[in-house]
Image 1 (tube, rainbow over the protein chains, first blue to last red):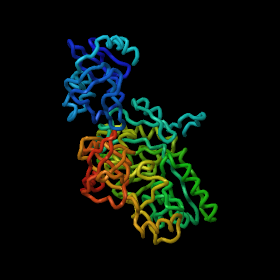
Image 2: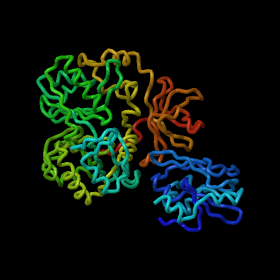
Image 3: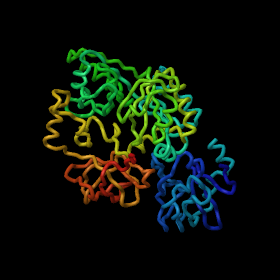
Image 4: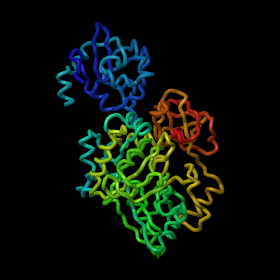
Amino acid sequence: MSLPDDLAYSREHEWVRVDGSQATIGITSFAADELGDIVFVELPDVGAALSQFAAFGVVESVKAVSDLFAPVSGEVVEVNEALQDAPELMNSDPFGSGWIAKVELADNAELDALMDAAAYADETA
Amino acid sequence: MTEAPATGELLRTPLHAVHQELGGRMVPFAGYEMPVQYGSIIEEHRTVRSAVGLFDLSHMGEVEVRGEEAVAFLRYALVSDPGALVTGQAQYSMLCDTDGGIIDDLIVYRLEDQRFWIVCNASNRAAVVEQLTALTDHGDFGAEIEDRSDRTSLIAPQGPNAAALLGELTGVDLDTIGNYRAAQGTVAGVECLVARTGYTGEDGFELFCDAARARDLWEAVSAAGDGHGLRPCGLGARDTLRLEAGMPLYGNELGRDTNPFEVNLGRVVKLEKGEFIGRAALQAVQQGGPERKLIGLQMIDNAIPRAGYEVLAAGTAVGHVTSGTLSPTLGTKVAMALVVADAAGVGNTFEVVVRERPQRAEQVKLPFYKRQRD
């Protein structure tokens, strides 16, 4: 799957799509492929405060449990409830309908600590 | 032939290159490098339930026991009675220690009147050989032990289409090989022991052949499998399949600190056959009743139970999860757990502690899945 170039990427294989003061976050296709079939997602609560690079939720594959790490800090304003019944969306459409949460960005400068698509592609080559 | 490893390196089965060609994700398992999956574990699992999956199980141990006193020896060494087997018949069994703890679970095949094969877990092969050798020496039994694991490969087509597939490749009349029966024959020109045994809860076969012919056999079965929906399957699917079928796994449900009676395997122990290793200890457990019980759990709350998670009953710790997953066939979150015997009862509610939070579960009957039989 090609990496959308309008996103910012973290070392822990999360992506960020900025939209004004808010951002949508998710995991990358690389992470989803590594995990294999995703069967469960523990979403953060709406209102939760995420801290950049800190664990904020859990994603489970058939065999393993993995932490999700926030690529940016902010307050969760919406979570993708569709993932409760269809966690496999993270495998089939990780950059689209497999999104995890929307946050109110705490500090845009944090985006400087993330990579662009080209740099992330190099990291995961 | 397995390659001799440098110190610390993993062993490989003769099919290692095939797994890599198929895109297998290789992981360390019992000292071997084995494929955990080729694509999707769930798809591989479903293929076994609906068509036929093909497994490389060459890492497992095959130990031959033969001689004039082979029967007497095995009746003494194992908890079951291999003397009750006819030629061409197999039984599930265990090697227990004097305290009743399980050294390994295994299948014993009677190949000839005085020649048996013990097929055991890769992780316990050395312990099994050591125990059997020590017992023959100590008991002065007229029986020989030969570890044939390195020269024997094992591939297993499992699923409702396995018989039709195999039927195209062998002259052996598969109707004469019922469940837990085996026969020597040729499959695609390769000499095999053809056994109707498996670890998936489906109909299926385990094909034992010379390691030198493993690749030929795999490729022939795969090629013929195209017409039957065959998919290569890894250890990931093997685990979810056996868990759905309520089958125990050594290292999870079974271990040196478990006895057969606490894990629903009392029926395998034949206390009345005469003296055998572990008899006194096992008789005591049977008479007093086991202190723990292996139960099936189905989650009520939305969380996946995993091996090692604590199990509570009304807030009190009563045991732990031994294996757990999301069942691909049933879509439910299920587990096997070892709990204090008094707490067990179908319909009882428990809490599984998942990331420090108690999540409700209900005890259900095992197995979770049983295949339809005609």
